[in-house]
Length: 247
Ligand SMILES: [Zn+2]
Image (cartoon, rainbow, N blue to C red; front, side, top):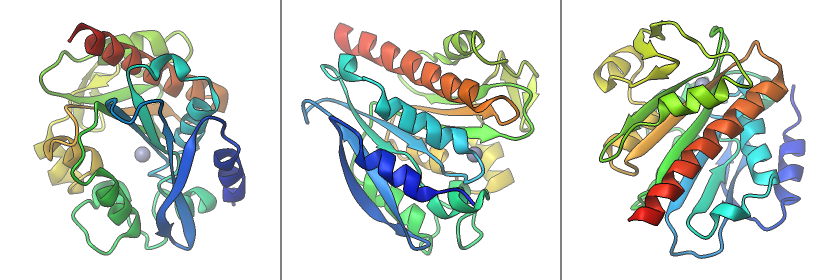
């Protein structure tokens, strides 16, 4: 069993951040954290811990919040859900307390974690969404990228991540075509295999035009996996700040 109290203490100890309880699932509070200097700026949404057995997503989100991100706040605000599935995190299981894979249950109305995500995104459009995950079977880092009206940046992300963590160079990952650790997912394939996913829904329902799912290899040391998520976030944020300053 992992200690969710430790996650709560780290959230409550954050400086220069606002946090609130978005709701409860399995008897545990789910937190949302905001870094903002100006409420009119575009919002960059980071999610972690959808799958409870992927702790580097939670650690990556918290490490992001604990570091100084003030250099970006002239252009962006950040909203972070560090641990969407506390029950899974505590019990080190992929599923929630109802034994549901919440990542693929977006259409269900009986899943509290999904209700929280739906409320959180309702009537909102995010500059970008980055979902932090892990893969137990992958020999290296990879990511999924969905984009419209802009160029993809996945290759640049995996290039930079490769300096701290091996990249999965297989040409097929999770039954999808991959190149240099980048998958441009086919929603039809994903739906057929797993149902309606949170990332697919957020992108297709136009809550964002840029959604990346960052996947670290669980076999690598935790510090490298966290570092990989942080490099991915920095690369994506930097790209958005550049395009925001041009337009
Ligand atoms: Zn996952």
